[in-house]
Length: 269
Ligand code: SF4
Ligand code: SF4
Image (cartoon, rainbow, N blue to C red; front, side, top):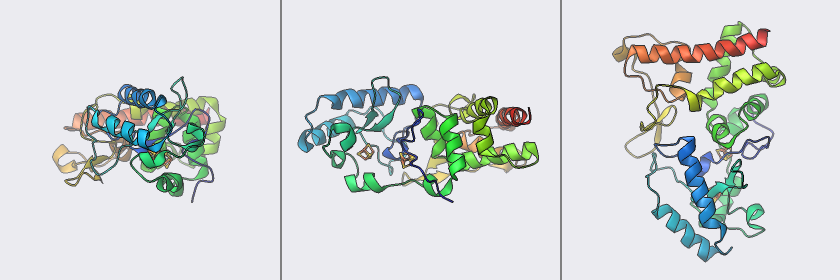
């Protein structure tokens, strides 16, 4: 199982900068990240295209950051920015295709050769049709990056849809039916819209930092909550819920269930 197209800049409004550290802050809201990307883009715009100047500018950007990374062990690159004036495409400002031919990625937090060849686990774990569904349902930089890098979320959503349908849910069919694609879009958009989550919790989706600052997968403490596991719980965790009581967990599950049912209904119409 592996995708046959490049997930980072697949077109159609989708683009990603997750492995450059885009979301690695407690406040990884669209507003906060837009502000940071706009700032980095503006600061680097007029810097002469040579390494010494870019290294100095990158250092300055890192030092002026108002928030420390959520996972200290995961690097955050200051060379990530908006590639277009409309702020619709996120990407590397030091890439030769962006600079007009000069290789400036060595001035970021990795060597250019690493940036050039790195592929995240989604390349190996998602199927083509699943990745195409994410691309079609999330035609914007913020949501696409959040969803395409969360294989467990995508697979768990599809599993819930299949459970609701009592049979296979084909991503190709969802892409080809506008009403279904809209419903999938609303389901995936829960990553941004789901209510009753703490926006500043030290959590990113399913993950929280361990003592070394590395991301570790979270679990629900069913004994403490006094409830049994439910099929929606993987999605609930991937959405970044950390329910303190059974009522919050029940409400989160119900929110997921409603969105999954909407997809299934649209498929059956
Ligand atoms: S996280 Fe994956 S899809 Fe996103 S930019 Fe990195 S390699 Fe590409
Ligand atoms: S230099 Fe590398 S890590 Fe930095 S934004 Fe570019 S691709 Fe990402």
